[in-house]
Image 1 (cartoon, one colour):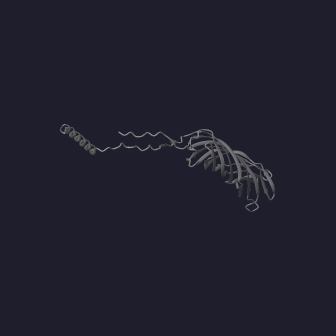
Image 2: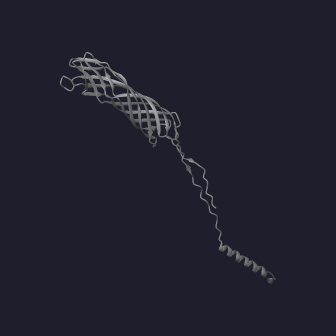
Image 3: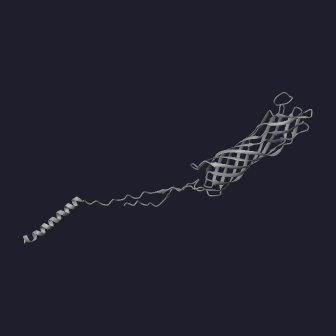
Length: 282
């Protein structure tokens, strides 16, 4: 019987040895385990926006008169080229309003109107009395300023947007009567009121209170051309007088309310989670 099964035992042993050799040559390697996909965020970009806005402003300004000239008469002949030896103006408050349009994220324009309250004037003229302050002259002026402005916004950083700008327009300057006091008495010259050319340069920064509302703090330099200041007065045989323009420095504060699309300028949204597409291995 052993002789009968011996061939089967040999075959089984041969197969076992072959299988063991095969496993020894090619060990089992488990398939790779892919790591979990990373979380990918997409930054939502702030797009360009446009739209209307309204604004309101208050300021305190200091005016500087370039010079004041006037006419005198000697022997019935007018003599020009006389200048005030002193010309001082006090500061004053103003309020303003305007409407504007945001053309691009960096460019906007507006039309503004400001009312400047009275600024007191004190001046003096030299004369025959032989000292530089022969007279004391008092008056005041107020004005309406209408300007068309353009601004360049220089980017928004943590809600703060610095800007520069320029404007062009006109000023309606209204002088009160001039009280001219000299040793001979006090003479009243009627004040003059005229429209003059004006331009302005601005710089400042706004801060986002909300995505629609911004507070604006800035400086404006305004230049107003000269014009009539006071009329001829027969009793003193003096006049008319003319101011040679103003240089005005303004510290301004205001609010801007935006009616149009603001995009994400003042409140950028958090990054948006997008679907992850795993790479394909070939």
